[in-house]
Length: 151
Image (cartoon, rainbow, N blue to C red; front, side):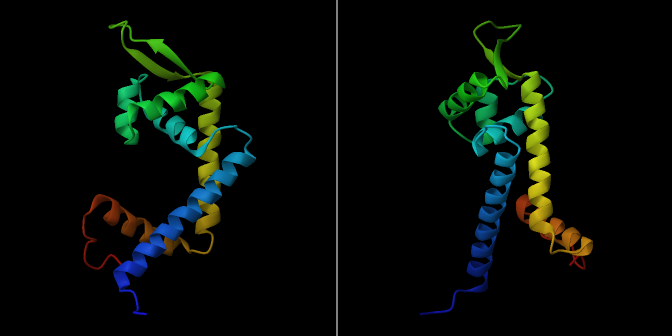
């Protein structure tokens, strides 16, 4: 058996890290007793970033999923009272999705669960290591090489 190249090893580490983060975040959300799935929590977090209620198509684009997937998520969140469908004031054929008061509470709990998950995952790192990791992740996410001397 051949030894994997360093890039393949890093890719595997990143995948394992992502899976671990998702598992811990899911556990934290379950502890909060919100009764939402990880996908629903992602939709709630996304809704929180809009100034005005978005259309389903806007949510699908932002989440990078097909519109039908958003419909299913919204159906579940609407049934639990966390979101509601409202008509667009300028075009009655367009439906927008807005958070209810319970939805706003759920968003706060989801963000708290994410913070708790991050604290748990990052606990072994010093503040300096966290700063370096943040810079490296920014470079990877943005596709921009790290400035010389940063690491």
